[in-house]
Length: 435
Ligand code: ATP
Ligand code: MG
Image 1 (cartoon, protein in one colour):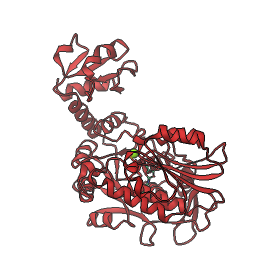
Image 2 (cartoon, protein in one colour):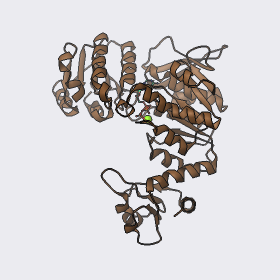
Image 3 (cartoon, helix red, strand yellow):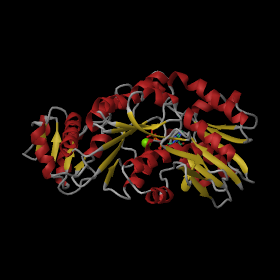
Image 4 (cartoon, rainbow, N blue to C red):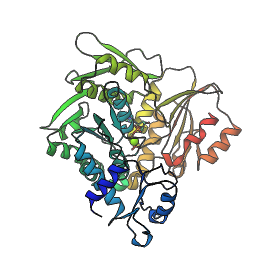
C-alpha cells in the first residue's frame, strides 16, 4: 500500500490508535512493535473491538481488506504524520531542551488557547511515536500546533523535525541529561541544535532565552523573539521582590508599568518557562490580560513543581517526575530560598541515565546537599547508596522506595518543609501519602 492510499484511509478514519486495548470505534490501528510485543499479533483483536482498519507489516496476519499491509508500520506512521502536517500547513511550534519542555508547552498552550484553537502534545508524548501521533490529531480547524520533542541520542531531533517541520523553534535549555545516549554535553548541544538547524533551513523564527549564552550563540543570524531577565530581551521578566508564597510570581517589565504575574508553579526555575509562554502570546497577538490570566490559572500536574500541604503538617514540594543535574540543582537552590519556620527535609532519589558521569554527578549532588540548609536528608536509590560513605552527616540511605516507605511508616515526618525529587525510575511519587 502506498502512503497516498494510506492517507485516504486515514482521512476516512482519522482517529489513530496504537493500543489494541484502547480501540475507539471506527479508528485506525497501527500495529507497532515493542521490545516485548509485536502489534501484528493484536491486529485481529483491535478490529474485533471496533477499529475500522489495521495497518500491519506481517503478511501472515492479513485476513481481509481491513488489513492494510505496509513495509514497516512505524515508518508508515511517521510518513503519514509528515504528509498530513504538510497538507494542512498549520503553523507548528517545536519545543525541545533538557528541562522544562512539558511545562513550557503547557504554559504556552494555556496562553495561546485563550485566543486560538490550539493542538498541543498530550502529556509527554514527545518521541518518534508520540510526535507522529500528535500530528495525526491535527485538524483543519487548528490554528497553531505546539509539539514537544524529546531526545535521548544524536539525530533524534533531526528525525522529529523532519516529520513535524516546525516553523518556530524553542530550546528551553541545554544541560546534562541522558549522557548515556549523548556521550557528552556537546552531544546534547548538537542534538538540540538540530531544531535550530531545521528552523534556519525553513526560514522560520525562534523563541530565544537570552539569559542562556549557549542558546544565543547557537541562534546567531536567525530571527527570534527574545525573553529573559535582561532589559535587552523583548519580553523581560523579573522575579517579584517579596516572595511570601511558595509559588513563582514575577513582574513583566514593559518600560512603563510592570505587570505582576502570579503562577501556581513552585520554583523560580519556572520563570523562563513562563516567559517563553508570554513571548509566544505576544508574538501571536494575544492581549496581555489574557496572557496573565492564563498563566495565573495553569496548575501543573503529574508531580512536576507541585506544592501540597499534608495531614502531618508538612509542606511538600513534589518534583518527582524526573531529575538530572541541572534540574536537581535548580530545585535545591529554590528550596534553600523558601522562607519557612518548618524544618527543611530533603528526600532525594538517584538521577538516572547519566552513563559514565553518574558517579561524579552524584558526588556533586552530595556536596551541594552539604552546602544547603537541610540537616535531615533521606537519599534513595542504588547510585546514591553506592556512595554511602560520602553521605553528609546524619543522612540516611535507602535502596529503593519500598525501604524508604517502610522507614517513614516507622518514623513519620511532621511540621517540615519537604522537597521530594528524583528520577522517574526511583518512583518517589509513591512516598507522597507518607509525607
Ligand atoms: P522530560 O524530558 O521528562 O520530557 P521536560 O523537559 O518535559 O522533561 P518538565 O516535565 O517540564 O520537563 O519538567 C521536569 C522538571 O524539570 C521540573 O519538575 C523541574 O524540576 C525541572 N525544570 C523545569 N523547568 C526547568 C528549567 N527551566 N530549568 C531547570 N530545571 C527545570
Ligand atoms: Mg516532557
